[in-house]
Image (cartoon, rainbow over all chains, first blue to last red; front, side, top):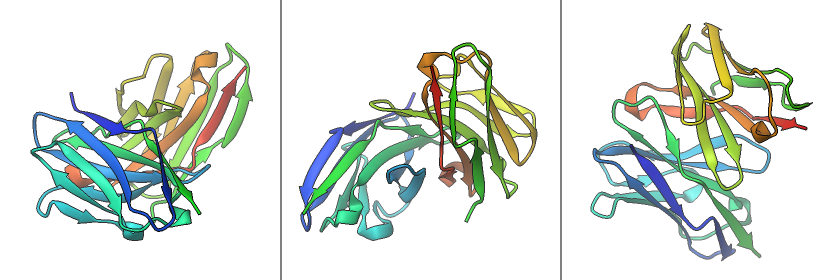
Length: 113
Length: 114
């Protein structure tokens, strides 16, 4: 069964610093990968997704993620953090043919002024 | 923008009482999902539906049942609520098709079982 591991339940960065949120997946077949963001007291919103093709995926709000099959990773990055990026971020995986999206446990990002 | 609403948004109930949460969509998306969110656990799938009267279990389905008698409504029922079911419940619909389809989430229903 596929699973997702997000390294670090809490990440703290300074405003203007690089944001790096880590996600590793386990799957015996090529996965479909997603990053979602959740702001306080809201539902989840899609940031970006990887399906096939280009391994570097650009999303909303300046975020991007790179699919690395050899490392089974799909880390989320943003060159310069903004205060409004403070939220919880979830990585998710779907294996082909499955109707289910499996989520990681989430990483809470804090941005310090 | 996919229209999805959950009701009630907040509910406090007592152990042993039945509870039903409703998810309503304004479009005709085939797939609908119920997740629960708990600190340290992320989102865990309870049940999902792939059509009217077609449902299947997720990873944490014990103590929950679902029904989908119309395309637009997906109901989650706790037959006899327990304190361990205190959680935030999210409904989601899948937009797009196939493996690349995205989930669009409702605002959540916060349930407290005393």
